[in-house]
Length: 109
Length: 117
Image 1 (spheres, each protein chain N blue to C red):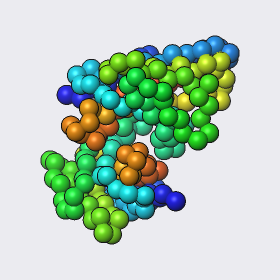
Image 2 (image 1 turned 120 degrees about the horizontal axis):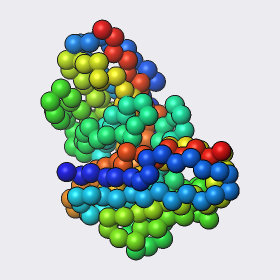
Image 3 (image 1 turned 90 degrees about the horizontal axis):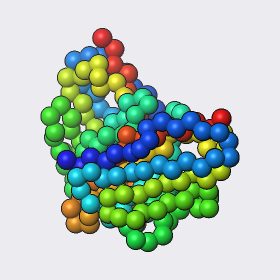
Image 4 (image 1 turned 30 degrees about the vertical axis):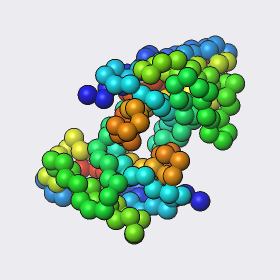
């Protein structure tokens, strides 16, 4: 079966760095996405990785290793507004998104 | 760019009525639009995939006669919840993927909260 694993909840301190891991097992691979979802709102797109390596976009970076079925989202200089759920999703061979359950990130002052 | 709108954002209706939700890609054309449902504290659940001009593909367990999807143009898809019941109360979110070759990214609408009394 297809499976996306990510931690349920993480806590970090304002100004610090946090890494949210995602491992996946899917039938085929056409890219991995990270989305941010604030409570009560729809997800917003953060990043897309289809090749191995690190993609940096401001305070957020996303890494992918296809051979290991592994990705992480790195958030630097954490701000209170970064408190949200972070969803990892993999596009399979049918171009369908397989969603992880999301990681709830709690930022403390 | 890549803005998706949904209307309405909130719906409260009586049991047995039908509710139509619109999803529009405002600044791009979308060959494919997706409809998701999200219950509180749960992950997104894909309901159906719709391609412009063709019938929607429904996920297992989703009743196609209850959740009618129309994708009449490259910028508009509609979801109609027919004969809604309280268990249909949920957060319905659409997403749109730009024309093939441009991006595999899905862009999400703001969602529609449905409460069936």
